[in-house]
Image 1 (tube, helix red, strand yellow):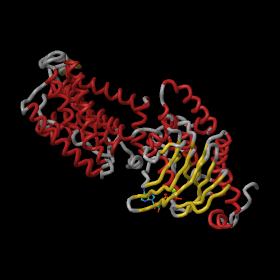
Image 2: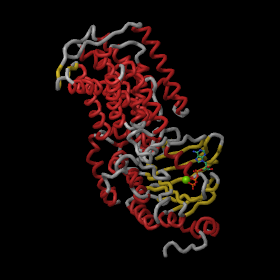
Image 3: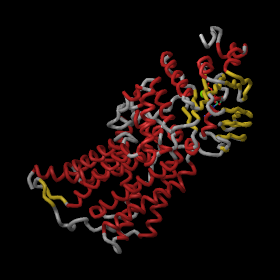
Image 4: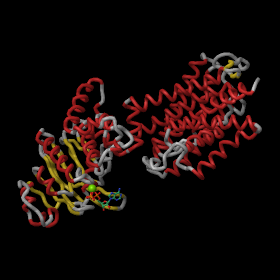
Length: 244
Length: 297
Ligand SMILES: Nc1ncnc2c1ncn2[C@@H]1O[C@H](COP(=O)(O)OP(=O)(O)OP(=O)(O)O)[C@@H](O)[C@H]1O
Ligand SMILES: [Mg+2]
């Protein structure tokens, strides 16, 4: 579904991604783990069309998208939940969700949009409860749910998430990862970036490890979780088996 | 005229002037919200709108002339954005503001060439320059009521637009978080263009509705823009509805000054208010300072 080949990107003179390649197949959940500053967010922004790559290819359903702007890429079925949530804080929860469906807005989609809204509300009950509240007044975890809900409103085939557990209370992190596995079980293709490597590998089928803009390791979640390097660098000493 | 009807007189004239300031302030706020810049060419949009309507009114009926003038000015606003602002989008806010000052000068010169320096005016929408309506003993021109009515309709219309239409919501989303808006599929650049069109169109309507009262000359945009700018700052930049309230307030303040002192002081009022606000309350009268930064760009 998504194939990235030799991608290079950065900011001004700063090269962040140095010839990065990876792929995500249909129906798969893939985790991307790496240290701070490794280039994870840069990669996702480039895929979503917020950032232009220097060179390399990004194929979505075999179509090159590296030259397309963000607005077009959502329409092609690839939605990004950005790092730091980026909800529209001065708009209501419901307005945030409605704008999530902006790319598909039309009279004939009207019923379908209502249906997705209903799905999002049943996935995150708190959003239904708070639908008239300004998004800026939600807690970090609720904002994260809103950001995910907003992305789902575009009915993506590929959902990309950048650190959904960042700044979220531990209890809520569990909820969010539960939701991610629900979405995966519904057949949604997912690319997930996380600092919380353990939780990410627990929901993902496969994973990649990124270091200074390059993929240094890839494998199934089990392989990565069992890899001593990964254990030392990303899982911490108190590592326990994920199927505890 | 007795004392109380005199007061009513001042209040009404203050409100109708204030309504125009409110519309100009509203125009500033629309563009500020979309881009973070202050469009110093806002005053010129009023004059272009009024002048275009004056020219068109010779060949078509007045309402048609005004509608066309608003449309043409809105298109001009969009064009100005496409040509001068869009290309330098990543440039600093300061640079963009200086560019809008340049645009205002170019527009003024262009108007001087097209319409020379003669003072022109649209005919009164209803009645003539001597007809008056008496309200509570005060006599005001029916045109002043037109001003108030047009202001009310535009403000209500835009409120509904921003609140309930997808496009209006998308514009607010862009102002709130541009990147997130793009991720939703909203074309942020076109939303900026649309803001310029809206702002210019509102300006043109304001220019038309005051033209019979104040008449119109190619270089009257700048003083109007200063009023509008005062109002926009007074309301707390980017807060369109506070700008409307501030506009009415400034109008009343001016009327009060005229009633108590000489009308020569009227023009000084807005400058004094502007300075006071900038020194003592830069986030505006109606903003709590803690929410003033909510939409920092
Ligand atoms: N907007 C920017 N302008 C300039 N440099 C940037 C920008 N954003 C990120 N960088 C730099 O690019 C490098 C990679 O950043 P990136 O945000 O992609 O890392 P990350 O892997 O997402 O890290 P984190 O885990 O902290 O989110 C870092 O060195 C960072 O300082
Ligand atoms: Mg990051």
